[in-house]
Amino acid sequence: MKILLIGSGGREHALAWKIKASLLCDALLIAPGNPGMADLGELIPIKSDAIADLVKLAITRQVDLVVVGPEDPLTLGLVDALAEKTIRAFGPRRAGAQLEGDKSFSKKIMREALIPTAEGRSFNNMRSALSYVETRTEPLVVKASGLARGKGVIVCRDPVEAMDAVRDMMEKKIFGTAGQTVVIEERLDGPEISLLAFVDGQSAYIMESAQDHKRIGDKDTGPNTGGMGAFSPAPLLTDELLVRVQREIIVPLLDTLKRNEIEYCGILYIGLMLTPGGPKTLEFNCRFGDPEAQGLLMRLETDIVEVMLACIDGKLDGITLTWKPQTAVCVVLASEGYGWKPDDQVTRGVPITGIEQAAAMPDVQVFHAGTAMKDGQLVTSGGRVLGVCALGADLADAQKKAYAAAAKIHFPGMQLRHDIGGAT
Ligand code: AMP
Ligand code: GLY
Image (cartoon, rainbow, N blue to C red; front, side, top):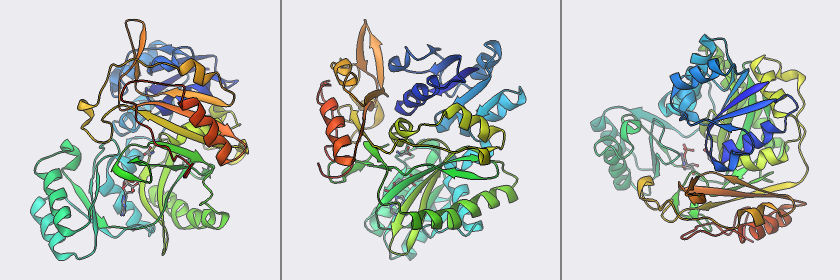
């Protein structure tokens, strides 16, 4: 098969690596990709939100399967546009992708499905939002309803902060149009885990567990980021919890989507908080987590293209996923300023060294995220630059290997957390 992968981050590098290993993959095109993926497939410089150009590419290059990595093209309807041209694609259509792209919609579906989640309300009018905050005494969380690169959530300590958050989003528009509608909800407490599932429209197949570290600093300090590292499996996810999630979240969600005539195919990512009152859904995403994907895909033994085709054909019940028993740890190496400064002020363009030495270590993969080539030299080009991943016999072993590999890599201003997977 000729496969076209869309995206350019660490998650997509891991997907490219796994797709390339599939017996079903004869040729791999990647749009736009990054320099780390250059030896896995043909890089084509079309951005992942250029829907019409991507459809044209899939037609002219006679692509058999399109795999969509990030959320933007999904919420923009890439899968719908490909379906119109009878091109098969892995990922939900626009209607399903709203679960991530429109938190207000997602909340409505959760309420309809009676899925345990934080109590909350949506507002598209600032005055009403502020009046609502005034009536609340509990700690609140204010969320931009639209896509904001994982940063559109402000966890507030008191109503004053919540008022400021509402004004920042709706008046100052710090998240642009994503903040035109806000969701205000009660603040929950507890550890978080990510649960990912393959979904074929009818049923879901839950993957091994993973946990990411969202804060920029060690011991979960500092601002939230897209994710500074992840590990899999996450011991917090017990069998009992898994049964509850299946019964209380996944089954009612799929039923409710069907009732709303939304056929969901692709990855469903459930952000869960384990509260004293049981597991509650913080968010749904419509794609693999980044950096959860890097660790999960290193552990997945099954041919991923086979699984994706089974999802598209509604035949997931014929699939069994097998996983390496080892633990995976992925440590993100980020640019100076990432997490602290607005994206456009993060340091870019500085040279990176040591990747080859790191990647040559046993059980290690280095996945590129924000890298570029400049005058024949690999340089940084984004907030999260690399994901250094390792498999180990247990968590401690995987941590040791991932950190030993990360120590080989250098670029000016490099930030990393030293406690991915727990205190080392
Ligand atoms: P989200 O994008 O909705 O998952 O939110 C990003 C992060 O904000 C989550 O991973 C949590 O750490 C935090 N968060 C979101 N909703 C809540 C909530 N209701 N209570 C406490 N923290 C939350
Ligand atoms: N790591 C969190 C996310 O991908 O949304």
